[in-house]
Image (cartoon, chains in turn blue, yellow):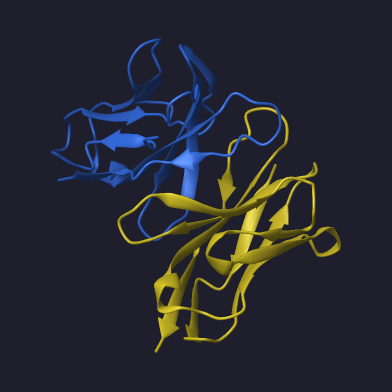
Length: 115
Length: 114
């Protein structure tokens, strides 16, 4: 059973370009979470999605960032007009739709570098 | 609101020595608690979790943690450190209800000395 997959693993963008980060959850998982890890810091929650719905986006910056999890295909985190402060590792996690503890399984991350 | 404090951003122990990584949490509701490990340039791997069952939780690679409500702590221990334990360790808290987003501590970098 494949784990959570993220691509690309590394992404370099110039200031003002767009970055698209993809996350394929584990098979059978319908919940996706995105986290950001800035250098020398812990992970910070960004957004929680179920299929076709954003459930909690309380950690998303108000501008330039958006996320989706379509009925078919991977979840996408999109950053428009990137700035140097967006350089970070972005992790996706997925969980099962079960009562109780929804253990989150993490992907390997996408490391974004903005030049 | 929930929060996690990990005491000690860097911990260094000798191979074979006891590993103790400290985690204190704040939560207005009974929490779920987690320890994750991150190896360089990799994602996070779940070590163990507490979800209101037994207060002493055993995880992978010989690690265990004890939930102490009175001390709001969830410290991670391993009796004998191995070189392969060198990594970054994150404690996290979530609520049993709602979105269950994880709130992470700042992390503790564990170094093992030969």
